[in-house]
Image (cartoon, rainbow over all chains, first blue to last red; front, side, top):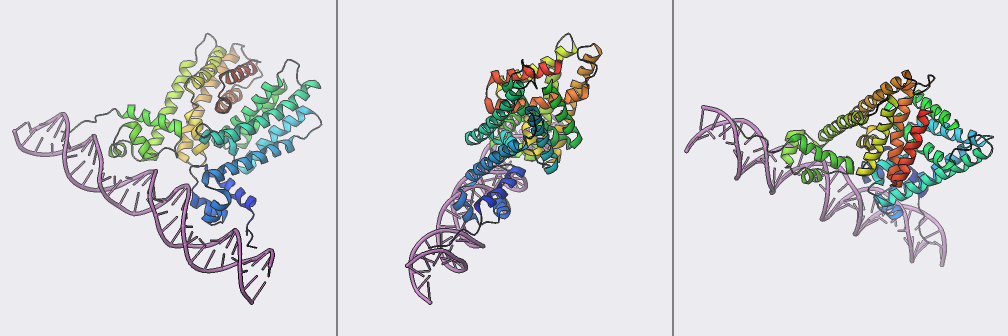
Amino acid sequence: MARKKEFDPEERMEKARDLFWEKGYNATSMEDLVQTMGLNRGSIYDTYGDKHSLYLQCLGNYAAEKLREHKEAALGTSPMEKVENMILSVVEATVNTGKCCMAVNSTFELATVDQSVHSIINNNWKDIVNFFEQLLTDAKKVGEISSDKDPRLLAEFIAANFTGLWQTYILSRDKKQVEKLAQFLIGMIKH
Amino acid sequence: MARKKEFDPEERMEKARDLFWEKGYNATSMEDLVQTMGLNRGSIYDTYGDKHSLYLQCLGNYAAEKLREHKEAALGTSPMEKVENMILSVVEATVNTGKCCMAVNSTFELATVDQSVHSIINNNWKDIVNFFEQLLTDAKKVGEISSDKDPRLLAEFIAANFTGLWQTYILSRDKKQVEKLAQFLIGMIKH
DNA sequence: TACTATTTAGAACGTTTGTTCCAAAATATT
DNA sequence: AATATTTTGGAACAAACGTTCTAAATAGTA
């Protein structure tokens, strides 16, 4: 009947996502997006809706991918080994790409004033904490952590520490420094 | 010879600071500032320079005040008691005002792309970590923490955890939750 | 009281913002 | 090959942006 889209909507959204990730929401203009996505203004509005709607889709896409990456990083023969590898994987990704977590950036730029953003990030956060909790419950069962530990609290503590690691990396830009802090965290949760 | 300023520049800057603190840099317009500061555009430009310059002054003001507050909160008969009170004071201020740290907001919105902002925040961060390090060194001397602990690393760990606490508060908006995490942190650094 | 330096209020500036619209180009189906 | 439907590029829009400017008001000095 008619023409088909000449671009892959998912692929172009990821270009937008990377730009939002780098510059933040408010500092990214529609003109920036047109240039970076390589799409016409009309095509963007037609495919994704307005700027805010596009941002929410980018953030949702990021959150889903991040959760997947966390789970993929959970390698190891024991639960605690999995937890440890997840932490090391976050540090590695951060220093390799030089970028922090888009959801955390978004938390501090928008989550206090934008309910939709808050909801996406909060759900993603809960998913990650839940995953940690599961692993730590397993770790408790097999005796890798002592029986007086609360897996839920420990999970929340680890997740909160990710944000601390990112903040530290932004300020220090020092790979060794962040790795040292991560190792310290790992030591703390083990004992 | 001529008229004197009819307003207190410091006092009006604090109004601007609170607005930037609440909305972030990019989401705050010059019109917003005119309304909130109760000053004419010309007076703002004449007194503080342009928007970016005003922001830097607000951030510097915030950082100085925050450091002072941290030191004021360091009450107690022993070094570790002081550390503990500093942590509790941050939590209390957060849940009471409902606001997080302006410097941390700024870290994630601007520090990666704005060198001046980065510099102000980084120096403030170092000041705070140095203060913690001093207290923890004292704590080590009097045997409040074990001799195998590294005061510098522990200080960085505590400071990083503040950011985690703020992130947690933004997402959960749950006073109890943040207090629980803070108590957990205190327990961790004691043992 | 007259003078003068400065502040004041707000109009006005040229950009940039996010968004909409339209004519031309394009392609899967008939 | 003709048709129908959708995309495309870019012009056009009003509103908001950060900034500058001007004229009137003001108050300390002479």
